[in-house]
Length: 71
View 1 (tube, one colour):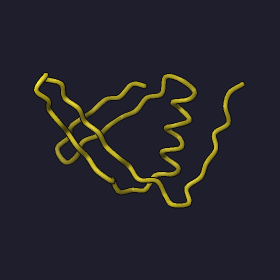
View 2 (cartoon, helix red, strand yellow; view 1 turned 90 degrees about the vertical axis):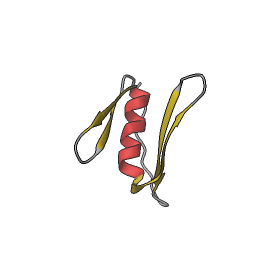
View 3 (tube, rainbow, N blue to C red; view 1 turned 30 degrees about the vertical axis):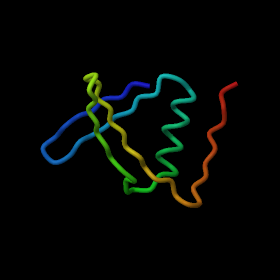
View 4 (tube, helix red, strand yellow; view 1 turned 60 degrees about the vertical axis):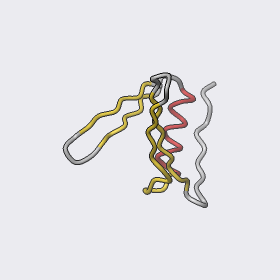
């Protein structure tokens, strides 16, 4: 999956581009079943100079979707 992080004057944008059918299905499920609010957003810097960022998006309580696998 290709992930790009953009910064604009009033927001950050994280763009996801699927490179496999499985990734495409995961992106579609996220769009259909996620809440509009974030659970958390973190950014961490470590002593070994690695940087880690994570965003958690909650799922709807009754969210459900199926994306059939390609045959």
